[in-house]
Length: 290
Image 1 (tube, helix red, strand yellow):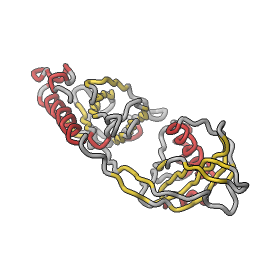
Image 2 (cartoon, helix red, strand yellow; image 1 turned 60 degrees about the vertical axis):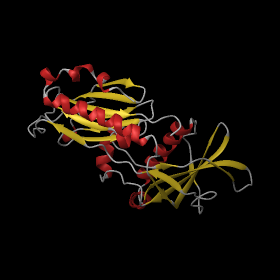
Image 3 (cartoon, helix red, strand yellow; image 1 turned 180 degrees about the vertical axis):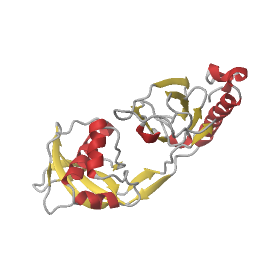
Image 4 (spheres, one colour; image 1 turned 90 degrees about the horizontal axis):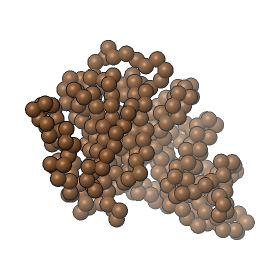
């Protein structure tokens, strides 16, 4: 449990920073308190049964690997953009477009020749899947992101070359998956709102400076410098178990940062400090056993 006296020395200078600082300090105290309460229960989750889509075959150093691309309406869809808009986003910043997906556990199977292999189930939103069926570009993109996601999650090295199985929508059986009921942390406003007259960037969104530090064993703090903003209006913030993604209004800013710690995203808090022009984020950490 973090001692509130240890939370950000600058924030204790109430005479200099005023009520805004005191409000953020209260946010940090609340985040620590809620973490203590959350440690007695597991994060809420929803069980889904993905529907089969198509199956691809690739390989790793350990043998043949099959990836079942599935779908479920319970998984949120990605941003609704045209392929031309998506191409432009990927050219400007490859991390600027995210496809929510659920990566299932590996399961041992037998291929058509009766030889042992490993299969993974990867589920995306059902509406997006139907759209993907009519687009080779989206299908290639989903397979690439799924492959990279499995590599990161399970420390794999998969061959980027793959082929889609004909007349076989999946290999083995598709198991139920648990998806966490995560919500975006609300960005609380500490001062005036963003001014619409702020200038647009000339060459794509800017990557803001991120400062991270471990305030206590169970609390990670972050400051994100946003000098072009006067408030939080238009900011989007997504916090995953080991990732922080921020988007700015009018594409002023974009940040996609990997965090090598397990974050309790549901208990995270964020506030925009108007005087400092910083987004401050308090991220309680999950214990190893949770």
